[in-house]
Image 1 (cartoon, rainbow, N blue to C red):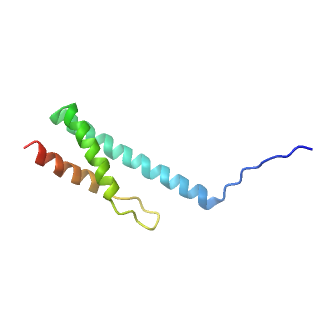
Image 2 (image 1 turned 120 degrees about the vertical axis):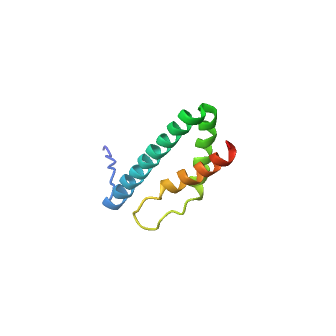
Length: 88
């Protein structure tokens, strides 16, 4: 007697997973653009520090309750402010 395990995923779980993947892709693109700009203007060492600060700022972002993505640009602005104070 063989047992067959079936994987069932309801539509809401799939939808949530797709949204989360989309959010992460958007965050990755925002971070990539920011890091590239910092590297070009201030060098790779400052870019690495700015990346870490951007991640710190993302952790402070309020996450919306609905299906909208966090505003990644706010993390970029906050990290840019920190960078500007450091490289004066």
